[in-house]
Amino acid sequence: FKWFVEGLGTGAFGFAGEESAGASFLKRDGSVWTTDKDGMVMGLLAAEILGRTGRDPSQLFATLTAELGVPYYERIDVPATPKQKSALKALGPDQLDMRQLAGEPVSAIRTRAPGNDQSFGGIKVESEAGWFAARPSGTEDVYKIYAESFRDQNHLKTIQQDAQRAIAKAF
Image 1: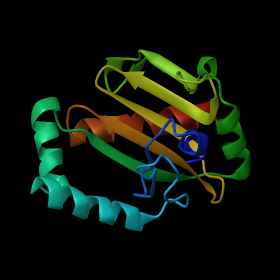
Image 2: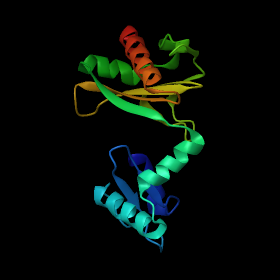
Image 3: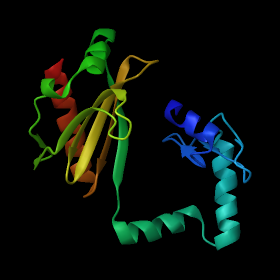
Image 4: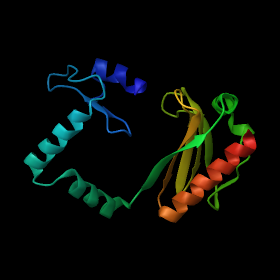
């Protein structure tokens, strides 16, 4: 969430959200409405969407997926020692031996965000039909694997398994 605070403060962003359903918005005048990732904001937004469109967010999401396809996403936590977490944070693209992800050629391995070239403290592997990112937790003895498939749930599970194997091998 730290990546969005400056943009909200300057008015460059009108909305910022994260996977845990926390969100922040600007007021209509451009000033910050809420700064603490308040889940209540999402409930108010859902009510506003329903009130204005007559459709709830799940109906709007169904429209999007009918047009663009269904994404299959999941985050899993994998037990890790402090030493393993440090190793993952320092892992470079050349240290991860992955040519394929779920049976497809790997198109990119990144440790820096393409938009601002900032390190995100982990690694991301991409293919045409899916991706995963792994980074150590700052508060627990785990590392987190975020994964998405553009095909189906079985493909997502294969991406997660490939991710765990590759990271274990890198340790």
